[in-house]
Image 1 (tube, rainbow, N blue to C red):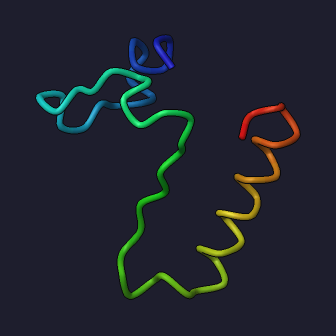
Image 2 (image 1 turned 120 degrees about the vertical axis):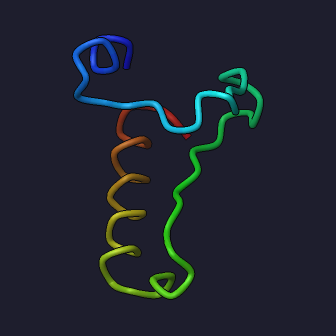
Length: 59
């Protein structure tokens, strides 16, 4: 992600809350608004992300 941060394509939110990369273990956290919890788009995104990570041996 470093090149994307350097180029400005990716921005760091809340830099004062930096955590070590392994602070949560091997987990990926997906954040979404509570009222969007059961929408098909959110469920499809999470499923797609899971498949992507599993295909690469992560997770």
